[in-house]
Picture 1 (cartoon, rainbow, N blue to C red):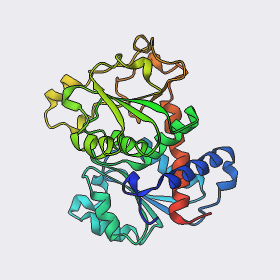
Picture 2: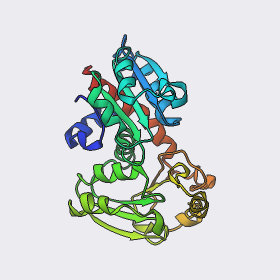
Picture 3: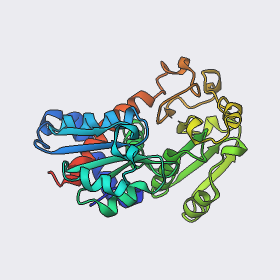
Length: 304
């Protein structure tokens, strides 16, 4: 595999193998601690990030490699007017693999067309976030023991949420998956995702604006924050930001083995009183991200 821009760049078989390797890394970390000795990962983050950037850096360091890069566009030559294509060509001279986040949709794809080293899309606008999706799949497989026969509730910002779009695309390739789409009218899942992914693959789904309506049916509840940075009108953001707040009371009808997930950062859409609930998996989910990124780096560098 040359680049990872979209989760569809990976086959189901490749995803399953990445999950297998990630689980082996969790069980035998010392076996992988020098796999990338002498290799360099460049992290080019044109948009702020905590978990994704540090997870990539931790992954490479845990494999014995080194890391270089920047954490915001203002600390790069982009602030002087340099194009993404030129930045990639230069950084590729100093690195073996590049993880890139950018606020503009399609920027990592443009970068991949100019890069002589593998590019990993670490999130582009409201479009794709394939390594978060791999993290989600490892979390679901580890916590539920399967990636089939699941009812998944997606709650919050389904319009701009790139993690939601990527997860729907990935899960649509597994058997007997059902989605409950929980969002206010202004933040509903885009029609093109419904048409091109859900309906095209005959995936059963329903829509509601009530988080409790289908709570007793869910195997997974995937919460998302309303993203302030995607709004042009602050008044709209303020009106919608507290639309859903998950608390213990709202979980009273939920299954005992429900898996509550969130790509983080959380603002206040999950009350802190849920954190100690054994069904809360979002901090474990963040930890799984490091291991699946380790597996991905190994695959993209062709390291066995």
